[in-house]
Amino acid sequence: MTAPNSVVEPIEKSWQRLDTMVESLGPNGLTVTGADGWAVKDHLVHLAAWEHSLIALLEGADRRAAMGVAGQPEDTDSINAAVWSLHQSKTPEKALAYFHDTHAVLMKLLGKMSDADLQLSYNHYQANDPRNAVDDRPVRDWVAGNTYEHYAEHTEWIDQVVKDSSPAR
Image: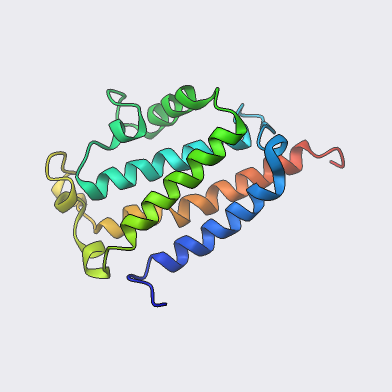
């Protein structure tokens, strides 16, 4: 089957690497916590929340509201802290389900989009909350940043958290 656009393949490749690692940890492995206080499950919820933000972007909806943190300042650190606070009590199983379910919704949406759709600007999709006109890059940049680039970043962090927690350190 041919992908509808050129972002599906790198998303699925990076997602598969991350998901395989996560599945190998099992529920107990999702509770392993790094020095920053984030458990593996927190990384998964964080990724899912940013996927919700991307879904909202593509649907012209409020991105922070989609993440469950409406009213938070727009800076990334504030949003990340609010997402962590909102979801930190989730069980590993619920965090994993949120991670998988959100990804499925995103991929269904992206599966309906063409490369031409992804070349449209951020402001095309977010007419009610536009970015500065000098930074009106194609929405493809946000897709990459909130999917395969983001997965790769957290795959490395999760791998490090697991290594650091290993008794064979």
